[in-house]
Image (cartoon, rainbow, N blue to C red):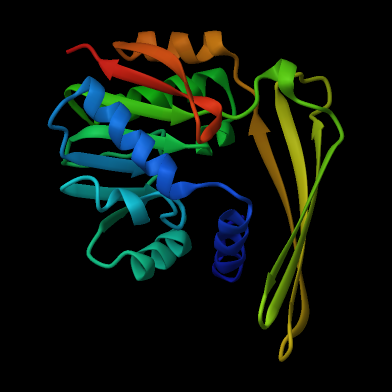
Length: 240
């Protein structure tokens, strides 16, 4: 989904949808230091274009990013010079460094199964220092999803207009897998109208599945309600 010609459209869309990345980053910093005072290092796993890292870089002495998409990371490097980025999958990456905090914002829903969820959580916890903090932003629970849900966005800049339209439905004979079809029309004065179409498959995980994954990875975890995170966040602390 995240080829180079899509990345700028993605970044513009994410920044136009009313999500307060600056205050979300501030809440992340506060939560981490409440549970691990003096925390100085943070890894943003599945960081995308660095929407949170742009603010987290001012809150921690050392921040790094990880993403599967090299094109996303190229964009992020240009936006946040000096930050170290790594290419990798959250299910099997291995870095030499360890971090006081690891975050994974929204992207966890792209995992395909309960087994992948447990694998990813274990891998993220593996990269924590002792008593380190893992923070995960979830997506919808199975009972919260609306089959046939339609979403639309219009992004207007001085010389550009982007329309996004999506349709989400449950996969056949599966109550926790979603197929999202997304269409973009990207219009500029010189380029005319460009069309991008993508299909994204996502998972609806239950609270019990999250709790089991954290417990299996050796963490105590809780779901925390926050002002700037409409679906709350899971925050877990490594027990050893």
